[in-house]
Image (tube, rainbow, N blue to C red; front, top):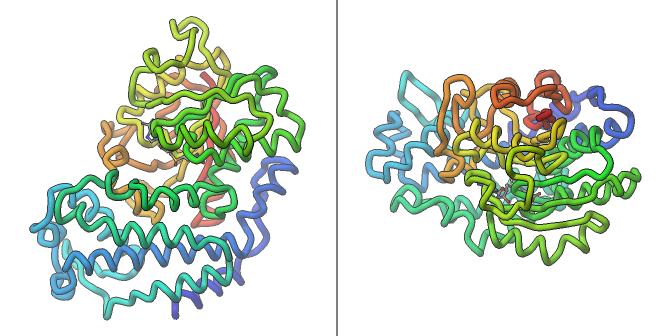
Length: 399
Ligand SMILES: C[S@@+](CC[C@H](N)C(=O)[O-])C[C@H]1O[C@@H](n2cnc3c(N)ncnc32)[C@H](O)[C@@H]1O
């Protein structure tokens, strides 16, 4: 397979890991991002996702039209109106992945469709064993998402049902090299400025992998006693219940409290406790990993979060970072069917599109919401330039 050979060449060509300027301990922790299993898994997932997207296009019956060449409108004409948002991402992504050609505004199949999912999976299994669930999650999306197009069913309902839930749990783990960088970079940003007796709140804590990493790291490096409260929150009752059941054991030493919390709803009626009169603020740090991009009105959410922070307190966000807003990246695939990701209030400067943003847009949005002293971990743009497939970063911003 040509692409696998190209990946093998890229893996051979990849030199020394760049110095991310994070200090010795952090640099040694992030060195895993520049190892062969990490890079191979990342490349293989991209190739696999592209073939899943092409397989979905063929299952939707687009093959004949794509052979002749068709516009986006022609492709989605018999489908539910919400199909447009997904197709607007799928088609340019397939062009980017060299599976479609573009001729003016018409999309055309490039040769015979090549859908060898097994081959990509076998390559990933040999280079980075133990990541089968990531591919099963993509397979499950392919299996379940068709009614989003054909019947206008909600993506939330199709992709977050009970059959897929275990795969999501398997995905949000520190052992998953595709997900771990989100947690590790956020951890580095958080631990650097943690004051004594810190009250920390996590937004969208989900499967609890960040809390587990923090507990382990804080115990190892001796800063566990700096945290006087760890408020774990999530919008989803299933995640919250699981966290309440498991986390005291899986993240020992963190002084947990738990609250259901929807970032898009006013905080004063969500049981966060006293201090919400705007005078003092409640938390020394608020952490959110891949959750703030679901803010329906990002400026409003950022401002309200600032109001929950003590003076000098910090908002720490870990996010998939896009190199370029117009360019589709494979991590977006799952989310293009989910309204909380796609239906947000836009602003030409501060929220030019839904979903993942560039580091520059995040900085602008944080500054406009009144945050200052923004620190990127690592310098996100320079790492993206050194490693063109590195799409993740964290930011710390002072209230
Ligand atoms: C990418 S996951 C984060 C996973 C988590 N860091 C972990 O390690 O498992 C995003 C989380 O945000 C939650 N979420 C989605 N919409 C939300 C909202 N409006 N308010 C708060 N949390 C939300 C989801 O339930 C999910 O658990």
